[in-house]
Figure 1 (cartoon, rainbow, N blue to C red):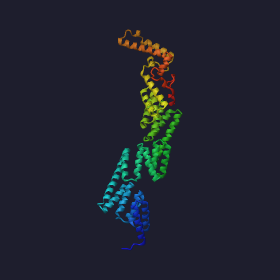
Figure 2 (figure 1 turned 90 degrees about the vertical axis):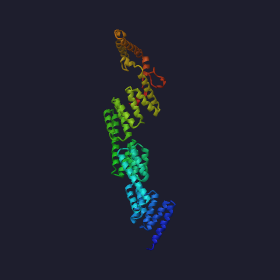
Figure 3 (figure 1 turned 45 degrees about the vertical axis):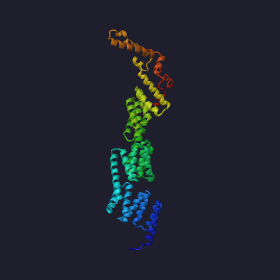
Figure 4 (figure 1 turned 90 degrees about the horizontal axis):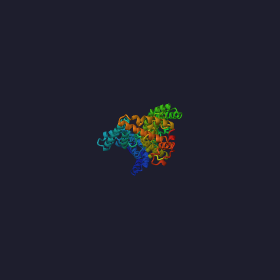
Amino acid sequence: YHLASKEDLEAEGFKDQGNAFYVKKDYSEAFNYYTKAIDACPKNASYYGNRAATLMMLCRFREALVDSQRAVRLDDCFMKGHLREGKCHLSLGNAMAASRCFQKVLELEPSNSQAQQEHKNATAVLEYERMAELDFEKRDFRKVVYSMDKALGLASTCHRFKILKAECLALLGRYLEAQSVASDILRMDSTNGDALYVRGLCLYYEDCIDKAVQFFVQALRMAPDHEKSRLACRNAKALKAKKEEGNKVFKNSNFEAAYRLYSEALAIDPNNIKTNAKLYCNRGTVGAKLNKPDQAIEDCTSAIKLDDTYIKAYLRRAQCYMDIEQYEEAVRDYEKVYQTEKTKEHKHLLKTAQLELKKSKRKDYYKVLGVGKNATEDEIKKAYRKRALMHHPDRHSAATPEVQKEEEKKFKEMGEAFTVLSDPKKKTRYDCGHDLEDDSNNMGASPSDPTGPRRAQWD
């Protein structure tokens, strides 16, 4: 039995004051007094233990871990010390190390119910981690987010879990949530390469490629071996360069080269949905210029599958449908556009398509005469004479009653067609669909050009 030294007594006094503040939940003051106790007597395990408990209440788990480890180094049988060390490890997401600490407590006291429960928690966290790893490989990002939420319920300050969750949110297109998680981490640790990478990833997926590259470069500065940042940075730069190159040759009307470059850009990163939607739409424009409407429609459809709010892709596709006279599809696309953006121009495009659809369902007098829509007066006359001779009832007087009836019908149609197309006024009305219009005043198209401002959209 040794007499307590002056330092020991002083240290005990500080500890008692620390305890009083701890009870009052004034953890900052408690921390100050426990620190004074440690300074006066640095070999006392319980002082470190007390300060660790205070740091845990202040959510400073890394520092609390250091104190609890010092405590158990000074006294290997200090049960609370092992328990606190385990809780710090667990909160920081080191479930394996936590598990060892709780096992140590259970060796000292097998019936310790707190250690039993915490050991179960550590095992659960290890299981959530294992599941998340498997689901990430399967690209089932929703499940990974679920596992990480569960794990974070038990390991609340684990940056690794938060980052994995944020990365999966970004991959699911939930950019705001991902940004928010990454920003929280960067507030506490501005040099966290993983968090910088996730911030970059969100910007990259939102097609803000220049800003994204800045974050990837910063992440690589903080963590030079950050493989994901290196890959993302390379993809972002390659994607931007290819897209710009494609745009440049497109502007110079080199459509074959533009088609090739947009195709190469599409192969760079299938995960970048926003940029790829734009690339598909651009390639669709090229397809239309190359007079491959079916290809153009397919590309616009791919763009819409990736981003169903992409107005430009609907407009581009609708125009292609108009060009190949699939008016019902065109009307459907223009309706979607007009519902989304009720502009004058969109209304006009819709009206034009609706009119063309109506026109396509009536008799096509040009087809009846077998001439193109741009046929001259002379060509119309010639075609009429030729066909009228072919279908004249006198020529078919020896045929069966069915054939006679059919030919008579055709001859009648020919006359009808010629009556309209040979009269400039009637022809103009027919071409404009005035015979079909419910509200001809709303069209806003001149009789000579029913397609009014539509062309400007595309050139």
